[in-house]
Length: 282
Length: 252
Image 1 (cartoon, chains in turn orange, cyan):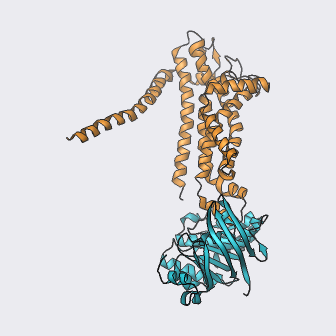
Image 2: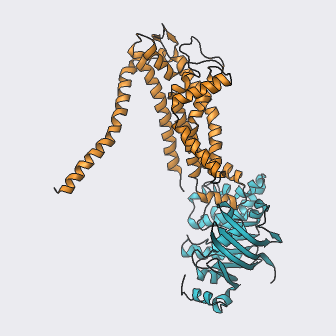
Image 3: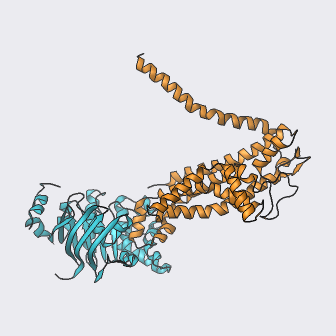
């Protein structure tokens, strides 16, 4: 074996190792959480309220809270995100203002989630006087996932071939008609994918809801958008660090439900994207 | 000249700092086929795209001069582009049907203009497909996706889609360049039939095609329209040395 070949083999081994290392933590996390959490998963665990100072019972209010928060975040972020994406990909000319908007989106994506939490506290909870509520939490999460929705929607819109735009425009369609009848229908799958990824992110974050909505413990389900709510990630934090002597099973069971929820969302996104790619003929 | 459908006076066009059209002065006659030939990058497609203002889609395009269609200067500010593009339709180099059914492709234009009567729409589909000689082939497949058609059928469908909005002028930007020779011959036949009712301007880099189908031919070079006249004359007795050099194959 020549020297160059040997060097090549060694290099190959290390770069392969680096790539393979990525699989290890994912596999381990999933394996450990399933192994330790699965015994806790019973019908009662999923549908009952926490009992005995959260050391027994179920996590139903936290699941419901997370679902409410995610729905609220999407109601807020989807229309704004898609409209912004349409503006940026179809209407915006390349000028200072457009560049500033794009820069803001990139920066929004890079803001640490705890900063969103503080921002939500200052703006929605205190300034708008929504209090710690589902509304405040949803809005905060909505702002956090806006960049995901805008970026993926923009990619989806821009992947529609230029020739469709030309054809539509040459037939006398206005820009809006082109967007409405040609571009949106052909990019809906991509937009949906981004939305689902956003849902996954919103469901899993703790910091943004910490100051804006999350309740330590609530004996009943929230009745309106101005109520506080329990949420899975925060509940997990609470029973792991704030409440002594919680059975390990319950902690890992909660983590498993949260993980399953997020992975399921991502799986749906992947399936939609896959189907869409198969359909696409241009 | 009799019936100029399009009259061009001192037309200049810039893409940023690059001048793509230089002082074009000419006219296009009604209900004939005018071909524009010239080497790649001479501005022939750009000129075509002035007539329906498709250049507006690109950024940094500046146009000066006059392009008068039916008495109206269409490059003036405030021109109603929807009306203009309804009147001046375009067929592109690559067939570009929408990823919809055959039927939906043809009714796209009429629907945009607010036609909702199903009977009328169906009539338009039939008439348009008959005009491009696709009706017999496709009348039982109207709900099939347009993307499943052959290239030639797609291009015919694109022409049908265009005819459904009842234009006056058809702009064709190398409409046969992605088709095989037989398909090209059939599309050329179609163009001869269409010129009875429409004014056709075709851009082609294929001189033989221009000679075969056009009544008038214009030769462009480096953004200038060197000459435009009757096709036979241009090919047999060109007035300009540069035209002669091009058609005898000295460059291009």
